[in-house]
Amino acid sequence: MGSSEGGCLTLQSYHLPQARKPERGSGVCKFAVRNTMAHLDSEAKEECLRKDLKFYFMNPCEKYRARHQIPWKLGLQILKIVMVTTQLVCFGLSNQLVVAFKEENTLAFKHVFLKGYPGIDEDDYSCSVYTEKDTYESIFFAINQYQHLMDITLGILGYGENEDNRIGLKVCKQYYKKETVFPSETLNTDSNIEIVQKNTQYVLVFDSFVIVICLASLILCTRSIVLALRLRKRFLNFFLEKYKRQVCNFDQWKFINGWYVLVIISDLMTIIGSILKTEIKAKNLTDYDLCSILLGTSTLFVWVGVIRYLGYFQAYNVLILTMQASLPKVLRFCACAGMIYLGYTFCGWIVLGPYHDKFEDLNIVAECLFSLINGDDMFATFAQIQQKSILMWLFSRLYLYSFITLFIYMILSLFIALITDSYDTIKKYQQSGFPETDLQEFLKECSSKEKYQK
Image 1 (cartoon, rainbow, N blue to C red):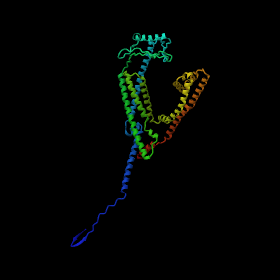
Image 2: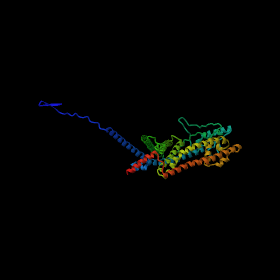
Image 3: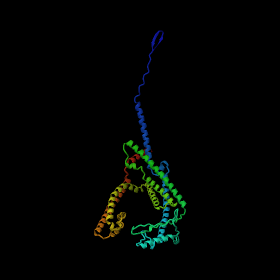
Image 4: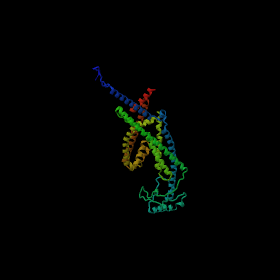
């Protein structure tokens, strides 16, 4: 390029702009920044996980000190213990009245309907007849008594009625069953006697309140288990990502709180039992047995759950730790001993059954052998064997002596030794410290960092 000035051509220098040289290391810097950010993010997630894990394994008092979280489940469990126990006591007292009412009326019906009843109230009593004449006389006597029931009885008794007409007397014939023809239980009468109970409405309201309390406890414990499973999943993924290995099974099972499972089962049984109890009070059901089993077992589980809160104190935690440590070994030992026990049970039943009252039934044999293990009724078991055969008498001695020697002096002693060994191990760990697992080491780093920051 140039310009004309006075006819002369003057050349001017023109500098082209140079291309910008690439900055060396810019990609490395960006990569380093990304790594730093990722590292910081990973540390933040790790620290958050540690805090969540540490908070999860705290007891209610520690959780309140750490985050001022009110222990709702603890208060609810204490309230539930009081209410469930009160409900069970009231139901037990009512059940006693029902049982007494049934027994007294059964005895009265035996006097009324059984001809020649001697008045001896025995559980296995049965009225037996052996001739055709006595059979017809007994049947006609029961029918005649039933027709004049309201005239001859002192109590207020009536007849059962359905939609059509009055329900008649039912007699069931059973031939040669336990040497009886007409058991006393074959008379089917409906007395329609109602037991008037005071304060029924208050009882129903109380049962409804128990159902609400157990339902709230069930929801809270289920929620805690769900949150624990989510927390375990976070920990397993983090541990696999950082350390490239799986967490041990012991640490994985620590997230499953067995006490919560026990509380859930107890709550379900209490709710079902309370509903059945309400239906019994409303005269819609009469099955006391199922209701008693549900309420009794649920109360047992509730009181067993109290041990969990005692376990927060080291002085009371020995029992729980000993049971946890010895349970797997005890179960394996019982499985092996059970095979020997079943062998003795079947052998005693088939061989000694015809010669001994305690070996006639398979269930009775099992109960008899269990009593022998605990040292109960030994002499009577030896003495009651019928000496009709010398061979059977000798076999019974060999059978009983070998069973008692094997189970009392060997198996029972080993069983106690397993529990004692677990107890000694727990006591040693409490003095020198428990072996640290992956989870405990991970939580220990959190405690170390907190002490360093302070």
